[in-house]
Image (cartoon, rainbow, N blue to C red; front, side, top):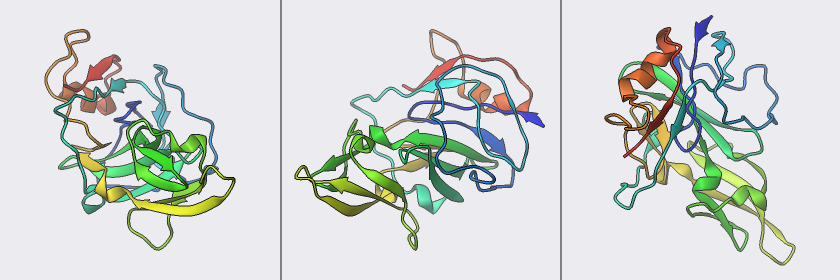
Length: 206
């Protein structure tokens, strides 16, 4: 058993799993209760990937934030949990692999029964049966209404809009750098949370 940490929000949770990438759905139901953005301390067995938050990271979307893409080129695996809106990916930071999550509601919307890239689109408020599209590397699919009562099967390639930044799955966000003046937590402290530290706090992107 080892301490874990998770980052909740656009940057998602982090679970250090050196040189390993077990599937996060091992032994878990596909419909899970929504994870609360609260500060807790937990431990994790290597055979189970259900991160419990100990560190909250908040992503600020600035006007100068550069779009990120190509997560599937480096991340080992990904899946969708909860109600079809939370995506988890197992991505490297140059050495270790980390599980992180991202709420797709922040980047996807439903326009006329079609999934589109849309900031704060909240597609899950109308679309159903969402998940990873079988037979594809990075496509996400849903059944979405067109406003006339008709549902349409629609999909979108997440590799065009999501990237891996130092182990973080993110879109339109920057690498965690420097210190936040309110909490004075640096990026290296976020990663060190998985190595025995019990410190908690917030970390913000520029």
